[in-house]
Length: 234
Image (cartoon, rainbow, N blue to C red; front, side, top):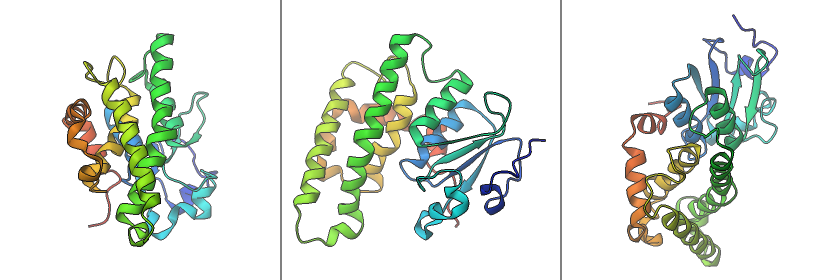
């Protein structure tokens, strides 16, 4: 049985199954990237809910695993050299899991780097922009009298959605096959509709290729499951 006792996070969130990959996350657009990936790959894992509404991602035990204090993070008891390894930042985790399982990223160099480019497009552009727009629509920013910051992020969100929509012209998935590029992006686009209620503001119905892609993604059982993992308390 793997020994994870040297990782302080396992004292705060004990592992009932230390032989399984440990997921520390919340069902947010960033968090569900990893839960969807784990559901898609079929890897055995144990999810731990990090309650970000109570700042649990700033708990010293969590920060010991991820110095940035942001979900998600994983602890894999069977790392590349056979020893436990911690991986943080959602994009890095997706790449790690794709390489570990040989799934959802091509081994052909050109397609692999194309996939990675779209993953980083999500990490550097889509996530931060959609997240800031969500702040102004859903959280404290909605009360700001100055609507220029909200408009700035709405305009940039439309630009990014347009890039995705054009990319998906004549394609089922962002790259040739369903990949970590899609997994990285699905939760964020879905959140625009389901959580941030930004569909009308952004004119999402006009992005027909993107709408079809989102429907294909949400039709995947692993995606539907992953969107709700780790489960919040009833």
